[in-house]
Structure formats: structure tokens, C-alpha cells
Length: 169
Image (cartoon, rainbow, N blue to C red; front, side, top):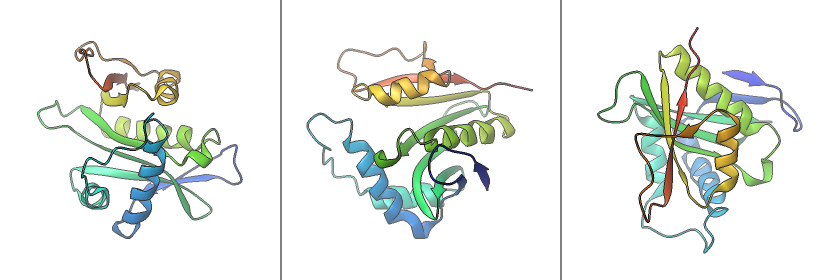
């Protein structure tokens, strides 16, 4: 468990999510995703509660939560993607409750992820960000994420691939 200062009311605590929080995590995910779909959140048939429970229970991945005053305000899910080198990690989900944007929650959560990756011997992090999510693209760019030269966007892609080189000691 890590504690980070923030610009909001109280520190942000970063910890591992637990299965009992699955519904809370899935609801936060839905609220955050709805902000960058111009026509509203699409119903693709995914059972997001089941998907989050699976992510939380995986032994080969991790879901971190950013908590302030007992309330989950942010989440990040990551693991080594199938077929990737052991020193590579993929950030599959990263969301902050829209009511708590620009209060330090995302910054604290990203810093905790990067520290977990660095300590775990990761050298490269990957992610995909929705093309309509300019706010998230700017957030990642401020932290050093760059377009992934190995995965350039193709016509009709809905996501951009980004890469982050982890500082090594």
C-alpha cells in the first residue's frame, strides 16, 4: 500500500483491488469510459463485472485502486501480454472517476504503476488509448508515453498504441 499527496481532500492510497470491490470497479470503469464516446457508451455485450472480477483474481496480473477516504476513485489493470517479452507490461485499463479528474488521483496511480513495473524488472510498458480520448492522450504524453513505432495506427483504428520506457536505476 502506498500513500501519495494530492490536490484533493486527503491523500490518495494505492492498493491492490479485492474481489469484493468488483461492482465498484466496474461502475467506475463505465463512468470513465462514457466520457470519451461521442455517441454514448456502446453496449458490446461484455459482462464488465465478470471481466473485472477475472482481472482482480488473475495470478499473472494486477489491479491497483486509488482510494481516498475509503472510496475507490481510480483503477489500473496490467500484466505481461501474451507473447511479449518478460520485461514488457501492458496497461489494459486505467480510469479515474470523472468527478475526481485533476485532483492528483491519476498522477498518483500512474506513479504507483510505474514503480511496480520498475521494481518488477519491466523496461517497457504498452497501452492502447481510444482515438477520441484526447484528455487521456494528453495525460499519457505528459508522463512520457509516445506513439509505439511498432504498432502504427491503421485506417479505421479506434485506438492508438503508446509505449513508455521505464527509467532504470
